[in-house]
Length: 190
Picture (tube, rainbow, N blue to C red):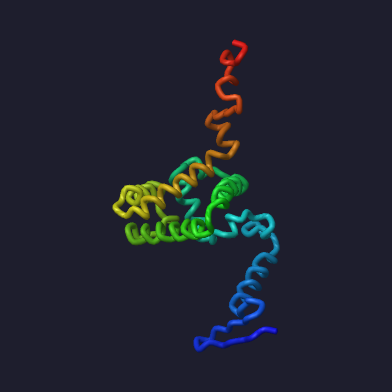
């Protein structure tokens, strides 16, 4: 049996199963969102990475704008390659507390607001040179929290881009578990 208590502010708390009306609505909304058919813009939930579902579409555009600023070659990536980048970042963030993922989302919104205040346009609408200047101001600025955030975001982007096998081949990176002994003439027999 469950006890229902209605608070003065209108919130309903159901004791017993732990679900409130608000939580039920959120759960139904999530279920409806995932029941959408496949379209070119929004693939079904099963095909999305956890990262893509966690980051709002606005933050996704901001993330890509920052990524193209940090690694200009990222502008040529297709959707599959972006999913690969997000998958790498998702695996790295998966080992961190959920608060870190939320902070990343908040940081992207703060960067967008800062760009709007300083340049009159959001981060996604700035030219790559202007985006670079905004990020450079923040990574060299007096606010330590923003400095750390920009550097952390930059590190995630570099990891996501260069950890892809295609990027490793493109830059000539050919790591081998045998280390130096794998090089011709450096093996144990030489």
